[in-house]
Structure formats: C-alpha cells, structure tokens
Length: 177
Image (cartoon, rainbow, N blue to C red; front, side, top):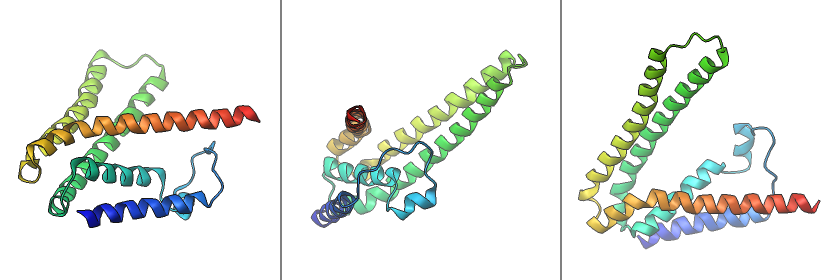
C-alpha cells in the first residue's frame, strides 16, 4: 500500500515539477485537438482521473491487496459509466436537432419517449453504481464501503472549489491588463 501511495505521489509530483517549468497556459478559445494535447503530456481528464484515483486510494486507506482487487472493478464501472454518458450525449444531440427544426412537428408521444430514454440512462448509471457498491463487501470493510459511498460527492465538491478558484485567478489576471 505504501508503495502504491508513493508511486502515485511521485507521479503527481513529477508532473507538477514539469508543469511549473512551462509558462502558464491561457484557456484556449477553440477546443485543442487531441494530438496537440498529447504533445504536452496528459490531458485535463487524465490528470483529473489520476488525482481521483490517488485521493480515493488515500481516503479509503486501501491496502495493496485491496487495491489490486478494487481497481479492476472500479475501472470497469468507470468504462460502463463513460459509455452511458456517451449514449446520453448522443441522445441530447438528437433532442437538440429536434428543437432546432422549429417546425412544430414533435409530438407529446415523442417527448415522452425522449424523457423515458434520457432518464432511463440515468437510472442505468445509478443501478450500475449501486450494484458496484453492494458488490464491494468482499474487498472493502463496511467503513470503507461507506467512505466510498460519499467519496464521489466529496471529490466533486473539492474539484469545483479548485476550478472556481482558478477561474477567479484567471479573471483577476485579465482584469489587471
């Protein structure tokens, strides 16, 4: 466990040192192509995922044995959720196309169908998360299971605070100019 924590902390530390040696980047006006992001190391999503895994490991105080059994299941859950969000985004795009038509041809039946599909995806995600948490009893202690249950919300709140702070700092720097 200590080796895993040390490895994660070392990786994050090295990334931070490398990042500090580069000039600060402004948020791009246009989306940055994937190939360009990869030239500068990990993308934001990858860094966020690394931080999430590190914080999760630390918060749950996982042993090495628990980590080797927990993370394959966790990664599988993340893949399922990612696929469900892609499905949801595709559906949202279809709904936006219907809205953009503005020809008044959409029926209440179609609206109800979209409602069922959209919230059905959300229900699927919730069911997968519940099944995952309930299935952790062979890996995590009851206390660790409860910690995992609240981890996602705690982590999301911490990251929101960080992002808001960064936005304020960027705005303050722009106002100085």
